[in-house]
Image (cartoon, rainbow, N blue to C red):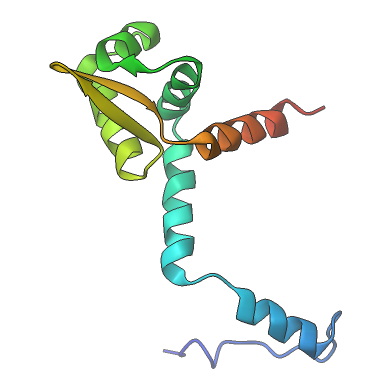
Length: 122
């Protein structure tokens, strides 16, 4: 079995100078950061979770209200919210026995809006 270095092909011609390539390589994000970003995009790849992001962009809501809006069970919504919370896409605060969910910060809404703009762009 070949190791990673043996399978690399060498280009005889490069479209850009060596210094630029070196600078880009040094600026690459670490594996942990890229993996966290990939997990975020993976979470946002689910239509139900995108619908949750959308309704929470309008107002903070409890699980029951989200479930009613999306015609789903509270259990299913809780499952999705747990994943979104673990990725810091949503947060909650307690009001008595009730948990009120909201978007974690404005970045989440911006990701949603930019994705929507991209797919709606003609």
